[in-house]
Image (cartoon, rainbow, N blue to C red; front, side):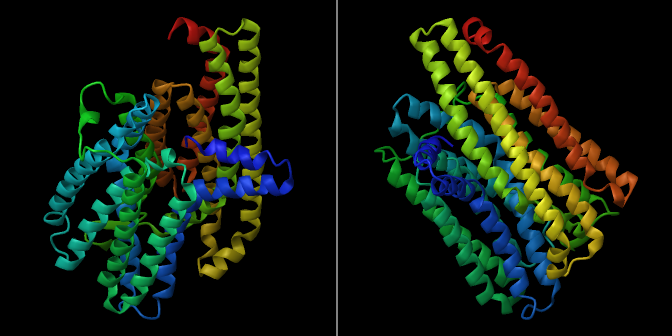
Length: 456
């Protein structure tokens, strides 16, 4: 999130409750706004289509299709997201801004080729029994989402955060409007709204990139040359996205916890609804995470490494390192407090929320576990973010690989133990990763001066 710290510090400098409120609201909007809009948009289309779409199963088919599109597109583009972001960041640090746009277009071209080929193969194999219209819409939706995720890596460099959120609002607003307009046409009508809205969103992101990074050259594939992208970041992007979704895949593909919806796509009603509701509870934690990491920690981080480069004294280095450690601990403590409060509020309101949505109270125990797990995911994000600042790519790779393996094994075990254990695999895997991450971070910070001078 390069640059957002400057915006947040401007708001915090006002030294008033209003300034702090604006900073946290701004951070929450930036960090959670786009995906909150996507969840609300898809669910809103389903709720408002109940009395119009016939047969009713088409609504479930639409929501399940979109969920699979989101999950698979994130995993497919994961290897390029972080590695390409780092490549662009290095070019910007070198003041080679003219390399950004050609390589962005090159990355979009590679993404289009890979995603298009994969989608085309699936259209004629796994989805061969579905209608032509459905296959065309799924093809376009998958390709558009893949292009959007790669375009989104530029959001951190543009410092036009509100423009990005407004673009997501416009894209998903268009999705809702067109999907509701075309809902008499059933599943194809709803998917058409989804595709049109995301085409508008992708076009808006491309325009912002084109406007912000002009270049005389149209396309370049320099980022794909040997040594230009870090292998650890390629694997980290894959493992992180896979880790988030692998428990869902296990529940979707197990016949005892899922049901067939359309073609090869399956869903697990008992597992899906609670986890999506739980993710809404992490907005406060995400806001605190962004404010504390991108203001206090980054300030002391910059002081420490400025002192390293400029020949600061050992006393100065130790002081700045201690301040870094203190800021990290304070940030994690604040995340725990705010997320704990959000968890309590969710627990108190869960019954009313489920009654309003028409969900069975039998899902409540799973929701409680998922809310706890979602809070742990915010903590894991904070730990990974600190390691990224310290350029500890191997540690991040190890933590994300641990997340994938632990989530897969523990989620499978939870299915074998029965419904009362659902969700514990996801929660325990995150608890394990956060614990290991904090232990490694503590060791890393204790050895920071040694590693900075002796191993770099």
